[in-house]
Image 1: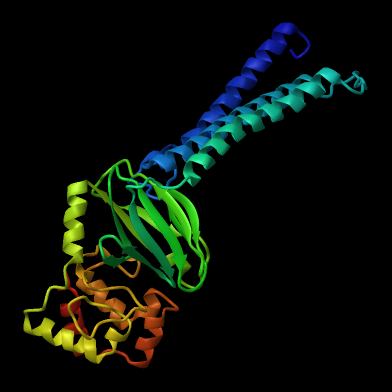
Image 2: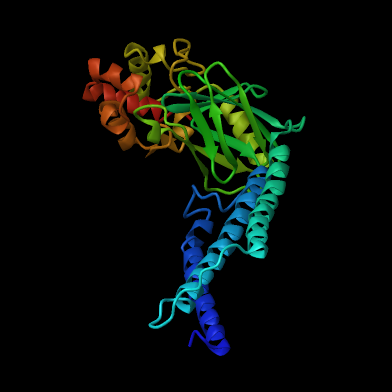
Length: 353
């Protein structure tokens, strides 16, 4: 069959069909990654202007890579079958083909140019200064949690970043200890948090939704690196303003007897040496997260557990098994909390809204 023109045509069409089906199956394997909710760490569903620019470059590379893959596979199949060894036939030796050499040199050059132009364009767009009206946030990496400061609003919170949709946000990135890396796949690319040095990134969220965008430290930073997560909540401007007002307020003073006893336990146990609680005069610590509105957060432990009384009790009683290597875990090993102390602290902390 390989020796006739019709046979060659049938062989080529067959190779194209086989490779097309194979390529389609490979691309279908990525179909699930376009579900922004089911796959929150996907980069295939950009939800900010800068993320869309970066995704456009990757999408182009992905398509070109697919075309190159398909073309090479078709040629490989056709040549392997058409010019296979046959009884009584000897291979004809020849050397050099200027036309082919020029073609297979030009094709990679054109592919590189096709990738380079949008790449440099995206780099220029994402590296320019943030707009003047951008919301300013300082993101500080700690082992192993995130501190978010809103200098214009006078707010400090931890592990949950709140942003208004449609407004640019300018984030200054730094670290208190080792190198971390700020990454929210659907909103921004990876940018390092370096001790003693400020890095900057900015983007404009384009979709408000009740589900959070998930973020992760993307630079290995020690034992609990994988447990250094955070959430980004993008809401309407009105909802963001309401959150800002509520978060800027001091803590809700405890009213129940057990919660009042918990506040006393919080001071007596030394928690105030590391944690701040606005409105609690003794709680001015700066080592750990600000706990003023701890109970309003959806997670604890930097995004690794739902924030509820059972998980909080586990966190306070057996922290090292939940998140190994933390300063607080070492402290609690030396001064374990009694059941009575746990009851009081859980009641107090779950009332900080």
